[in-house]
Length: 345
Ligand SMILES: Cc1cc2nc3c(=O)[nH]c(=O)nc-3n(C[C@H](O)[C@H](O)[C@H](O)COP(=O)(O)OP(=O)(O)OC[C@H]3O[C@@H](n4cnc5c(N)ncnc54)[C@H](O)[C@@H]3O)c2cc1C
Ligand code: FES
Image (cartoon, rainbow, N blue to C red):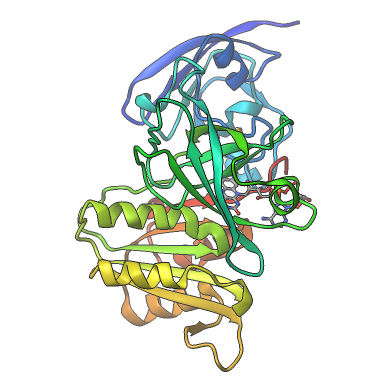
């Protein structure tokens, strides 16, 4: 029999909001029904954007991707709110502040026009969009992502801009082409300059944290470079003094991109170093030779550095880097990460 329970969401800044949720609906759906827009993206247990910690109460978790909610986390009380069905009143702590909760669907969606699309490596394209209409402001925290909809369908995919907030309406995305992927095929075959698409966001909690003057190391696998570039460009804009290093890894030399943009960033930012790592490279490759995880381990061991770490890219690379850092004794609470989980995984 269906019952109704109270869900209390407690944000990082200790604010809270309480609403009803039926035992047969998930928390995100119940919140939307009451005009409360919590952090979410795929709403099918695949992306981990809606992750929280259930501090009180009982619930059932529906079907989720093991990458988005590993079984150990589930045992520890971590929940994905889009797949969480309360069976009593529950209290859930979420890792973002109250201002990230929206109370109207407007402002979350807008239309943007394709300004340019260019292939920048063997498997990556740069998609540049510009917001249309009177209000052209693009506001987001560096590291967040937007959901882009394939025109004429209800298929959306998440992408993290590589640029920063601006008033011109510009969004710069770096997108890896996946064989047979729906958005990838749209980019390869149907995208035209001037075409319009719906954009929803920003979403997500990946972003810069303030931990005093600790150095920041960023580790990017392929297009995982996008949110990392956004964060480093934001640091440059604000003249933040912390030392930072970008470890940028790809599999082959043909896959590397943005070397000129990274060189320009180094020239503009005296506190920045970049290590471009190619795993299977030729003798001619002048950058780091090997996997980004091994190069990072080498440097951490050699220097004994204890930086804050920001990891982004394919789940396997993020998990392997996390394991190395934890193994070397870096505090887990200072390792921030975003996995580019496949949609609907
Ligand atoms: C928060 C977030 C931010 C993201 N930001 C970016 C970004 O900035 N740039 C970017 O390139 N991607 C990003 N992604 C991944 C992106 O959302 C899509 O999943 C990806 O582009 C594939 O979409 P598609 O429609 O082309 O393929 P789909 O139609 O979703 O998938 C087709 C097939 O390919 C498989 N597949 C999908 N992705 C991968 C993969 N990465 N590796 C191997 N197989 C895969 C699927 O399992 C499926 O079998 C992000 C994902 C998340 C969750
Ligand atoms: S919104 Fe819940 S896992 Fe994606």
